[in-house]
Length: 260
Image (cartoon, rainbow, N blue to C red; front, side):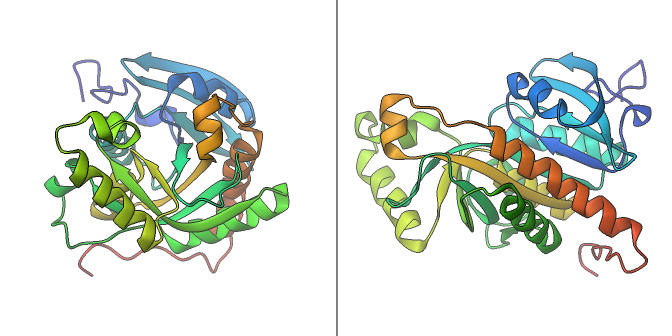
């Protein structure tokens, strides 16, 4: 906490949050996502971290931008968890990796390839970055209710955007191209920059984590044809609604502590 007793980077307090958080990476997405909540209100912004809050099913839900990449995402997850948030869903966009992906198709991520540096400070690379199964199922159900096209699978989480999008101009082009093709042939469905951090930091802090992203097809990336984010945002909020209802039932499942 800083001298004002606020989270050091997010500049929010425990009074501002509940148990649930949605995590877009850009501040520009926060207000649009929060608008789908009941009673949305702006809380604060510091650096890349903008926070709004609202209600879903009577429970407080915060929407906090994480910034781009694993380091700032880890900061957001750490500070939200310290304030009492125990359920977090990353909400964002990504480039598709499979050739049959439709522009705007959703990726409900079950795991992430840890091709970044941040999570190695938390757990050895052999430890898998995986989503909480309850959140995967809630996101699937929400996508189906929204009529959204989606698929489930692992993401490729990286540190360098241009290392992936323009590998041929890099000194290590051959290595970058070979690694990307390996991830693709192994079944990775999209490439992005935050999910591995959400999953691994969440594992260490014993919070539930999920991730849903809207994929741009390669043609759309080339032409700048941005798909609508409405199915993405609707799916994320509806999934939180499902989890809140499940938590309110007497059979709600609490995740085990790390190492238990």
